[in-house]
Amino acid sequence: MSEAALEEVSVLSSIYCGEGEFQLLQQSAQDGLLVQINSTALGSGRDTSLLFHLHSSYPSCPPDISVSSTALSRTQCHNIRQKLLDQAAALPPEPMVHQLVEWFQVSSSTYSAVNSVSSHLAQCVEVKEEQSRGEEEGTERWTAVLSLDHIRSRNRYIGLLERWSQQLQLTVILLLGRHILVILQGTRPGIKEFCHLLKTVKVDVDSSGKKCKERMMKVLIETPLSCSYEHSLQRFEVKDYKMLPELNAAFQELHMTDLYEQILPSLGDSTAHR
Image (cartoon, rainbow, N blue to C red; front, side, top):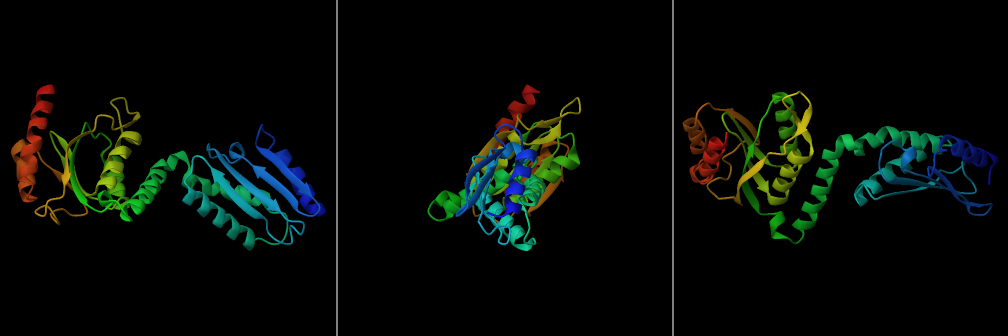
């Protein structure tokens, strides 16, 4: 085991000195060093560990790396590992573990809580891929109509809805007026994930200006996609209306009069409640 490797391990133990952050799991002249750096050292707030195997010839050859996590998917762990290996292969043959950890600290923002949306979407994609291999629900197209409580931060809210529609491959039309309605077309898992995001991501602001989630969202109807609805919507569209007759006309233009008639009692209840 080279002096450089032993010195690096000593430095790493000083840098990552918090409880449970750093562990030297193995030290052998023949097999090299096995170093583990845990989530609290990574600044990502996740239960994630990086395992570095420093061979006896290290740093002449890059380390083997393993990534494990109870918070990230198997695919995400595999992608992180591959990117770390690529980074290691591109670095000069000198102590590099700290550089690799720092690189992960920067790139971990991709997987951080700030991007929980992306994490949910990645899981949704995995679910849809599994369903496409055997479950009919994953391929059949559905239509759903949602009711939103309010949109105060219009640009932010609409921007998020459009982004989700693209990422989940959903067709979306947003109707803004006395009632705020969202018409969705796509796979049922995609529609479910869209609804999940609405209730778990801070999409708007409340009356005091604080960011808030769409906890009052309601699914008014969800049904298999009728042939008459197919291709009736653009990928993402926003329509403003003032009175219920205009809302009715919007559904007529979309050839969805029967859907409007089915959700009308819910709109009446909402009007009475308000």
